[in-house]
Amino acid sequence: MRQIFTSQRLETVEGVARLLEDAGIPVHISQPRSYRSRRSGQFSYAEPVAPNKQPAVWVRIPEDQPRARELLRKYGLLATTRSYADLPPSAVGPLELGGDKPAGNRWAWRVRIGLLAVIAAVAVVIWLRRPVPVATPVPPPAEAVPQTQDGGEEEVRIRISPAPPANDAPAGASDQPPR
Image (tube, helix red, strand yellow):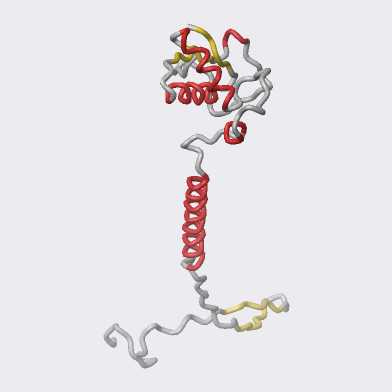
C-alpha cells in the first residue's frame, strides 16, 4: 500500500477516497471514524494533529498509484510541478462532485422558510387566543355615619351596604315562613 493523500479533516479524506473508488482504484483510509474518536463536526485547524495521526488515503495496489496521482492532480487536490497548459479547461476548473448541487441548497432554504412560517403562525394563534381580562365588580359606595362617644369626640364609622339579592324577589319576601 502507498499513501497518496492526507488531511486533518476526515471528511476531506473520505471524499478523496470516494473519488478514487468511483474511478475503480481500491483504497484504504487510515484513522477512520470510530466511536472512540474525539473527532466531531466541530473542527479547528488551530489544534493541529501530528502527521502520523492524520487520516490518510492509501492506494492498495501500487500499480494504481500513478493513475490515482493523475486523477488527484486533475481535480487540483495534489500539488504538481507540471503546467496546466496541456490540460483542457474543464480539468483546470473547480471540482464538481455529484452530491454538490445547488438545487439541494435551495430545497433546504425552502424547508427552513416553511418551518419559520409555521412557527410564526403558531405564535400569532397563541397571541390571539390569550385570555381577555375580566372586569371585577365594583362595590357600591360606602356611607359615612358620624357617631359620638362619651368623651365628646366624634368617631366616623363606614357602613358598606350589602349587595342586592341575586333574585328579583320583593323586599318583604323571604324564604323563611312568618312567625
